Length: 86
Image (tube, rainbow, N blue to C red; front, side, top):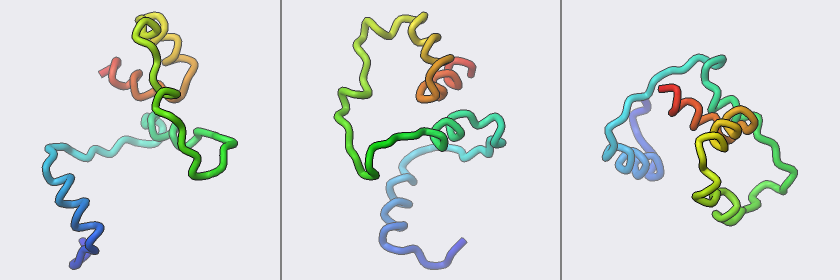
């Protein structure tokens, strides 16, 4: 609702205008992905960068039972839980 966008805002607006999406409000108690992300803790200094290989699991590890166990035990997989329940 502001009248003038900064150059940074204008670039972002141009980039995201290429996508078709809806913004939907999700109440806090049902928005488990945002809740899990806000509770993530790391004792690493701010700005620490990890290798992509630290976040990728081997293909054979992604069995249905492994994914289900991760959904229950890891907040990083809550987005998968939402996708599977949809």
